[in-house]
Figure: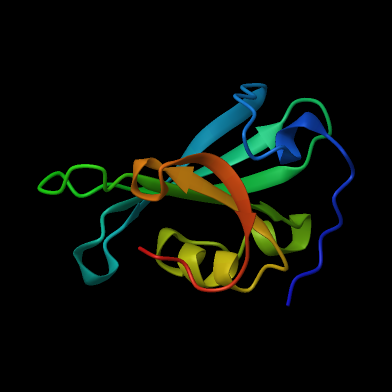
Amino acid sequence: MNTIPKIGCACEKPTSDYTEYRSSELGIDHTNGRYGEVTIQQCKLCQRIWIRYFVEYESFSRSGRWYKGIVSKKDRSQITPENAVEYLENLEWYVYGGSFFESTGTFGQGKLNV
């Protein structure tokens, strides 16, 4: 399990509408027809790198959900849209939310509901 300590930065707060990121699209995860959008975000404050996974099923209302977790610099180059879910599932903690969960964000760990 990937252990990444919390350091108290605003980017860790699950319910924050923190927008101080540099973002770049990593691509779309087509696994099992999910079409998950995978984005790499770097916090402008603490410089840590996050991977964000977002999926929404248009035929179902309230199906939007997102997950984000911190990526170590050494792991960053190994992450692809197709292995992003597995990476997040193996983190000690991640943040998740969305209309599916009726949540603006909370901490979680383990299996992702995608």
